Image (cartoon, rainbow, N blue to C red; front, side):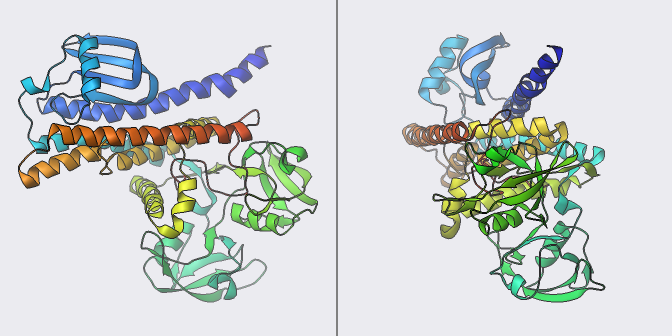
Length: 480
């Protein structure tokens, strides 16, 4: 019985409490940024709320209503001098606080102060991300394989790299005669040239081989070698019900190390092997709780995905807990920001928009992903939280009327034209985009719930039922 209670605490209660803490702190620092800047600039604050809807707890102090509400998907600071707070919400806040200020009775605020208040929310998230980055730098964090190795984890067979002789498992020791020790070094070296020469060391062979390749601009406009990727870990994060993986007895947390006698170098490597062995009973080797387990799976054709799969989803952030690295804070934040920018650019790139849109997930997936990261380890959850804060900061500054970037847009209009937009225009734009955003969130929530319902497998939730390393996140998984 005692062991059962411990299991319930470890599997459910502790992760749930930590999800609330992590998300609560993320929301708190954002709203606190708005609040503190508004107070510093002498602006009136009516309400400081964490969450939306009816209040769980509330207290009035020095004319400000502080409250925690039932729906923890955000928060707000009611600033009657700031546009555009909706008239309806302003009325409800005034009734609840019994002391709300009518905007027309208050002095106007210069547009530059409104911009500062709008930016302060994102600044709060950035500050928290910086603190997390410094903590991880000084204490160390579990490493992904590509952070400690420059080995090639995948080479597409239709790529120039494959045609020139580069193979999975090759170790890149130098790029244009510059020594490299991990995949980040390889990427940075490739970004500076339109043509690169890899000095490659192959297993079982003496010396190195020179392979010259062209680089192309990726979606960020950065030069890179197409068709290759870093080494990775094939750790199971989800299992599709009724799949070959479930029938075989694979479990969430297993690491697939071999497939049909081939040592695996990345998830993409496994994807190709699975596709080429449709309807064949294939031996695999798993690492489970520190010991090796042999199984047999049969890849089956999936008409929706148009390829053979075994029905597993991989952990988007597989790390080796036995290895600790110390990544400089600036490099951590840069990787997070680049990952988000890469995703946003993919959304507006015609050839990539469809696939990028499929990767968009809502609040439910964020909760589940954070849950999984917490169960994987506190520091892994901190890495995810750091990325989430950078994500929130960037997305909130998009020039969309209902977001902080929209406030900045209205204020910039006022600075340039020397006149304010009419309240009707402002409220019309805000309400229109609010409806669109709420509709999008409802759609994403429905899609998330349907996805997790179909793929749910105890003791943890599964992810997409395909052999893909694309995580079910709102944005691509962060790179350490």
